[in-house]
Each structure stands twice: as C-alpha cells, then as structure tokens.
Image (cartoon, rainbow, N blue to C red):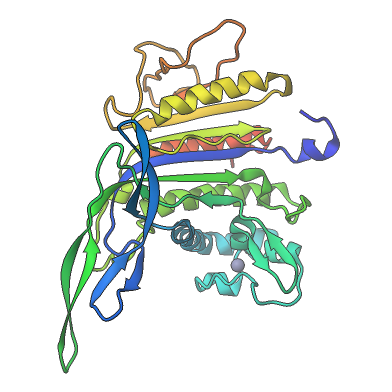
Length: 365
Ligand SMILES: [Zn+2]
C-alpha cells in the first residue's frame, strides 16, 4: 500500500455482490407495443449460454441496468427524505436537491455551468449515482454500478407468455396483451465506496467524516430498501409479487486497496468459484497487502456451493455455523480469506457495511 498522505486519507474499499432470485417479469421492463398490434413487448437481450460443448447465443427477457439504477435512485430518495430534517439541522447542508426529491433524475444534464463540488454537496443522488453535464464539462462517474438483470438458464428456465388484459373507457372496451411470466434472474452490483463524498478528481466535497459516513450508510440502506421494498419492476397495482424479498443465493466481496468483482450468479458453483479466485488474487497481491472478505448465503441446497462440515470462524455471529468451501485448498504460507455465511441477505449487507466502515477507519454510528 502506498504510504503517501493522500491515500492514507482516501482508503479505497470496494463492495461487489451478485445474487440470484425469482422475479416476475410482468411489466418489469417493457419496451412498448409492437406497431399496429395490441401486444406489449418485454426487453430482450442475447446472452451466451453453454449448451453441451459450446456457447450459443440465447435471446432472453432482461431488465436493463438503467431500470435497476432508477429503482435504486427512487429508494435512495425515499430514504433520504426520512433523514433529511435531521441531516440538514446537524450539518446545515442539503441532502436532496429539488429535482431528485421529485424523482426527476436530470442531475444537471442540461446546465451550461456549475460546480461539481456543490452539486455533490447538495444532493446524495448526484454524489452516489453520478452525473454528466456535457455543456458545463462536469461529471462524476457513478459510485454504484448495476448489471442487466438476466435469467440464469443454466439453473432454470425463462418463459414469457401473453396475458390478456382489458381496459374500459366510456366509449369502448380495449383488449390488449402483455408478456408475462417468472424467471430465475441474476443481478450483479458494485460500489466504489471510497468515492462517496468525493468529486471525480478525488477531492473531498463534504469536508466532514461523519457526513460521509452517513452517506455511505444511506447507500447500503437504500440497496436493502430497493431489494426489500419492491422497487424493481412496474405494474405492481395489478401484478404484485413478493419474490423480490426472497433471494435464492448471493455472494459478496469487500476488497481493499484494489477492486475485486464476484462471479455473476450463473450456474451451479458461482460462490465457490468466486472464493477460489479471491484466494488466488490475494496470494498474488500479498506484497501490497490486498485484502478480501467474502460473505455468502444460499437457499438452493447443494446447488450453489459445496460445503465442508467443520470450520471455526470467531467473527461469525447469530450462532450460525460458518462453513469453508472445499474448493479452496489450504496451502501452507498462503493467506486465507475470511469467509462468512449469512442466511439473510440484509444481515449480510449489514455485515459488509460494518467491514467497509472498519476498513475505511470510520466506526459505525
Ligand atoms: Zn439530485
């Protein structure tokens, strides 16, 4: 690790997570009607899928990363509204600007001049999810990234069928069709936590560690709210499903000082493969003190990982038995990454946040 003053202050910590969950695809990411028909189409993308001994491209219903980001932004705004009063009183600063408060995520895109530092200071949405104002020549890359949500057809199938619906007006009854169905989806996300509260070039925009810590905490609370509060998808007034709150399996990695991405929640062994790769990665970078912690959960039986029966981990809480993965071969002189198992995704995200704040030298409030 570099020992100069700047990087001491700017401790780089990254969060990476992938999960698999059953999702209703009704209206989750519709792209409009087919011309001259009453059929509403879902968004599809081509995904390489292993079939026997080769990869083939399959056309699958997908939800764009932009749609997931929008769900996250709405969750962040709803949460920030609850914290706004106290925050404004305590720091004499704004937590949300007027546009974002109304779910209008323009984020200064049309402005011809301004100050990036002020935009970040005045709104947590700009700070966490970034902005681009080409005319003013100002931007901040989002600190949070989302993948497309894509069905994992290595472990399940994705079928969409047409459902008829009717709408009434005073003059007529309209009949339409929308694509609807369920699929086992996978979603990956990444948070460059150490850039929250900073401008693109790396300068501190808040000048206050407490405030920064609160913004980091709100980011992870918003992530939980997005997953638990049913923010992904649409048409919930007529097609409310609760599968969003029931992830089937997930893996989280926290890393410092270099980023480490978990495997996408694809196939039967993505958790084990992530751990194996993380182990090799820290051993390869032990001269710079690369750290990785893994947290995972699994409700898919033997599907997503292979467990060893015994292991001890002093950091494990909730009285659960932690398990090592048999794929990780214990070799002498090699660093072992801490691995913890949490059945509940919320508890796993809380534990991840605790680790992140500890590594950043910010204690949990
Ligand atoms: Zn804003």
